[in-house]
Amino acid sequence: MIKISRTSGTWVCGIFLTCNFNFVFADVVSDTERVLNWLEITNPQIFSSHPTTQTSIEPWLFRHYPEAGVYAGINKNDNGAYVIGGPWGSAPVLVDSLSDLVSQIPAGRWLGAKPVFQQTAQFFDNLEVAISANGDAVAVWLETDSDISVNSVWAVHYNATTNVWSAPSLLDSGAQNAYEPKVAMDTYGNAMVVWMQKQIEGINTEQQKTVVSAWAARFQANSGWEAAVLLKNENPSDGGGFPQSDVAMDNMGNAVVIWSQRIGVQSFIYANRYIIGRGWGTAKFIDLDIPDQVDASFNPKVAINNNGDAIAVWSNINTSNIRVSHYQPGSDTWDSSPRELGPGVQPEIAISDSGSAVVVAPARISLADSFQVAAWHYNPNNGWDPTVKILDQGRVEETRSFVRVAMNGRGSAVASWSQLNSSGSVSAFTNHFENGQWGTPTAIEANNTVEVINQGVEVGLDSSGRVFAVWRQEAQNGSSQDNWASIKQAGTSHWNANSLATVPGSMTEPRLAVSSTGRAIAVWLHSDERSDTGRYLVANQFK
Image (cartoon, rainbow, N blue to C red; front, side):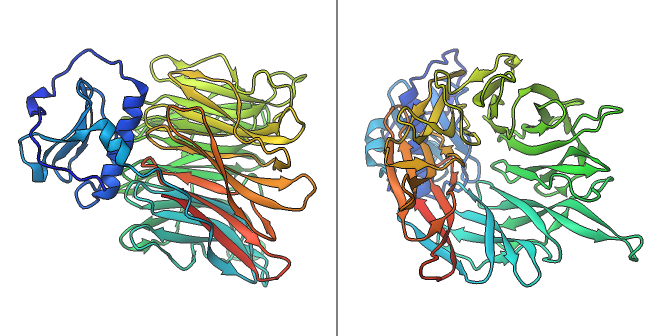
């Protein structure tokens, strides 16, 4: 535990004067994030929130905790850690040097795979997970009731304080099929789950029709699950379409949801916002409706930062291009017309607190090309860079999976995917984005007796820049399979790969969530066909 002593120091309120110095060594920034994160984890009774580290006042990197009336941060001139306010009063308090505090922080470790929930009768699918700053987590999935052949949305909650998983909760009505649940969490442990679900509308048989609409359910940290809410717009879908949605939350618990809504024979993207203290707004059309053209938009993804800025991306069938739309919280508006970035499928989006963003996707830049890993960069000052960046540049093998991306509040990002390596087996790859530039593709595991399955590699990173990746591997002869994780510390190039679990039976690809404070959780579904003991939801936590 980091202990704060009352040593005299040189931090006074008057020091907070604006200066023109902006250069900071990367290790000082990363170490500051690690120290402030650990300060919050070990002293939650005082530092209950997780504010963004501020850099606007030289020579300080600091966070303000208004709930306690405290400032905590690092002076870059002497690399000392200081606190002021609250129980420390108006006099400055020197905690310790930054290097000494970093040396006290445990490295963290995976605690081991443990079953969370067992189900002997139902079928699991579409597993997702999210994590909060203090390590609370929510996992959601689809579960098929074999008696009535209906897919329903279920969820479990993990309380990091008590180290207890809840019993599963049914989030939807269970009357009609639900599709592809997604989940996000805020700093305080509140969560939002969104999914698409069929409904039967109409009074009598002749007038009845099947519609597919977006639903959402909120988990409140102090009271549990709230009733599901229909995010219905003026044009509910009729029939099939693409039953897909996504959700993102900022630190305060405000949420943005987007989904693909069928309108007649077309599918368009809609969005809605949840505001703390106000609830849900009105669904808004954010897509492009071209007259005399049958259009279909799908694979929606959304990201939000702690200033409320949001960016949505999705695929379009007619143009084969990725479309993007920005949300401006000041005017409560989306772009009047989405922009088309370029060709790509299954795009992913991540955004920093400054508003910079990256989009990644498997893409054929020209019809003659094989699928490559493409990326686009958005700078809030200059807009979208018109040049697409190929992240697997120099590799001749076609990418074998979707592409994932994560970005922290400072704007560091990492993309991940699976691809053939030089030995002819499938490996896990990453590429890092720092200071506005992508690096080179890096294989993060090198066990040629096994292959990374083609579904890809999950990735996340904390505010210090530490990167987590997880994936599933199978022996080339099919004799075994296991889930793996690898971690790269900020400022290093070394990946430390370890098995998350090697168990008999089959397992799904692991899903990963990483908090800004450096907590992480990987979850997957496991079935032991040999002993026929049922199906398990399994979790492995990093603390």
